[in-house]
Length: 130
Image 1 (tube, helix red, strand yellow):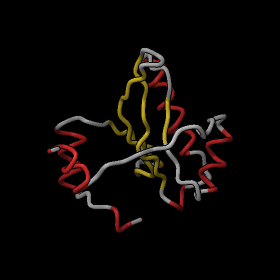
Image 2 (cartoon, helix red, strand yellow):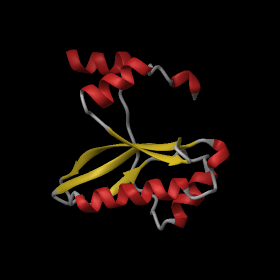
Image 3 (spheres, one colour):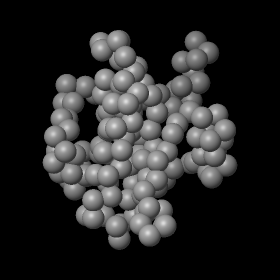
Image 4 (spheres, helix red, strand yellow):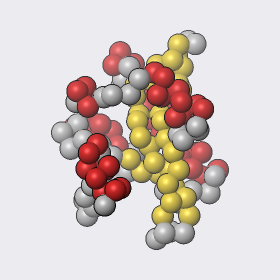
């Protein structure tokens, strides 16, 4: 999967902090950043209100299993509730069994009836000019 990563620090700074297209919360241990959650608002016409989409949840390996991921999701849930959002959702790779187990332990429900589609690169550009 690392071959798929093309983001640079400059791009992340531009899109997250300058253009403000996403938000990020950090979790600290003794003043050191040990994890983060990057998210943005989406909208559901079914619900008639905004939701929050969690793009990335990351905790450094040496801090996993210590409750930091849960604390990040708890804070994200509080943000969603405070902002009147109808849901918090995210995607998880189907082979990531530890994360799936973690999400299920929080009572998150998999969305088995949905399939995610994506256009990137030339396919995206070609559709845009048709």
